[in-house]
Image 1 (cartoon, protein in one colour):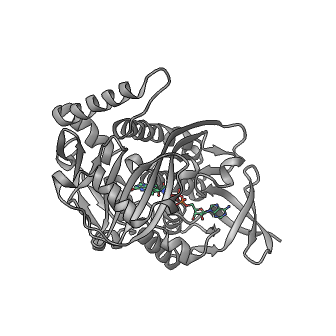
Image 2 (cartoon, rainbow, N blue to C red; image 1 turned 90 degrees about the vertical axis):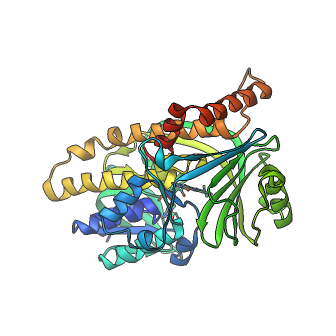
Image 3 (cartoon, protein in one colour; image 1 turned 135 degrees about the vertical axis):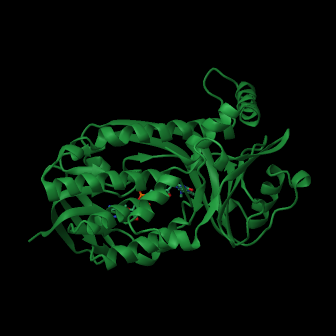
Amino acid sequence: MADRTSVLIVGAGPAGLVLGNLLRAAGIDTLILERGGREHVQARARAGFLGANSARVLTEHGLGAGLLRHGSTHGTCAFRDEAGEFELRYDRLGRGEPHTVYPQQLLVTDLIAEYLARGGGLRFGVTVTDVDAETATARFRDERGNTGEVAARFLAGCDGGYGVTRRAVPAPDHYVRDHGISWLAVLADAPQSMPAVTYALHRNGFAGQMARGPAVTRYYLQVPPGDEAAAWTDERIWAELAVRMRTGAFGPLRQGPVTERRIVRLRSDVVDPVQHGRLFLVGDAASLISPSAAKGANLAIMAAEVLARALTDALLRDDERALAAYSRTCLPRIWRAQEFSHWMIGLLHDTADAGQGPRFGSALRRARLDNLRESRAHQDFFAENYVGI
Ligand code: RFL
C-alpha cells in the first residue's frame, strides 16, 4: 500500500523546505523525503548571501526569526587588480538594496524546525529512486534497504542539480554550459580580513572573500581544472590568497584553520520546461547556476514561493491556472540570473573564447572593470542585478 500525501517534496534544501513551510501554513498536507541525515543537512555550508527578495519571502512567511536575529547586512563590495582597489556601495546604487548574510546551514536548520512545528511530514535517510510525473508517484529506498512508494496529488522536485526528478521531464530543452573554470571553495575559522566582499583579479587567477559570520569566512581561489582539493594545504591556500589579494599593498589577511576545502566546477544549466504532468522543479533541480553571483539559493527561495501559491490555488480553490503557467513564470527570472552570473564570470576570469586569445580576453575584462569603476550607469546595472532579480 502506498503512502499518500497532497504534495510530495523530494529534497530538504532551501527549495524544498521553504515550499513545505508555505504549504503547511496554508494547511496543505505535505511529505518531504530527504536522502541525507538531519545532522548532515543542517551542517552543509554553502550559500550565505540572500537578496532583498529572499529576505522578504522568509520574513513575510514567518521564517525570518533567525535571519533577523543573527544575520548581518552587507552593502559594499570591493574589486582589486593591478590598478588598485575600488569599492562599490551597492546598497546606495541601483534599487538601493543590501544583502543579508546568513549561512545556508543555519537557514536550513531554522526551516526544518519550523516545518516540523507546522506539522509537516519529513523523513531523513530516504532516497527517492524514481518518480512518475503523470501519476504523481515516487518510489524510494531507505537506509536499511527497505523500499516503498508514495502517491501524491503533486510532486515537487527540490533535489538539486544532479537529482532524479529533473530526469522525469521528457525531452526537455536542456541548456548546459561548462565554463571550464574551477574554484577552490574554502571555509576558514577566522574573522573576515576585509570589511567588504572582495574580488581580486590577478594573473594567477581570481580570488574572492565573502563574509559568513563573525568567526567564519569564505574564500575562493580559481584553480586549474582537474586540481584536487587535497593538494591545497592551509599554508598553500593562505600564501596564494596573499599573492592574489595583494596583501603587500592592502594589508595582511586574518588567518585561521581551514575547515572545508572543495573544488567547485563553474557549471550552469537550465531545464526547460521546469514542469511536466504533475511534477514541478524548484531551485537547483530547475537550473544550476555557478556561484559567481551568489544566486542559487535566492532563485530556489523565490521559485518555492511561486510554486507554493500555485499549489495552494490548485488544492484549495481548484484553480490550476498558476500551476499551468509555472514554467513561464519562473524561466525569465532564471535566465536573467544566468545572464548576470555569466557577466560576473567574464568580469572575474580570463576567459579565452574560441578565436579570441587570452590576451584579448584579459583586455576586455580590464575594460569591463574600468566601466564599473567609472560609470554610474554600469554601477547601477551591477547593483540592481547583484542583489535583485
Ligand atoms: P540543495 O540545497 O542541493 O538541496 C537538495 C536536497 O535534495 C536532496 N536529494 C535527495 N533527497 C531524496 N532523494 C533523492 N534522490 C535526492 N537527491 C538529492 C539532497 O540531499 C539535498 O538535501 O538544492 P536547493 O534546495 O535547490 O537549494 C539550492 C542551493 O543550495 C544552491 O543553489 C546554493 O547553495 C548555491 N550557492 C549560493 N547561492 C546563493 O544564493 N548565495 C550564495 O552565497 C551561494 N554560495 C552556493 C554558494 C553553492 C556553493 N556550492 C557548494 C556549489 C557557495 C558554494 C560553495
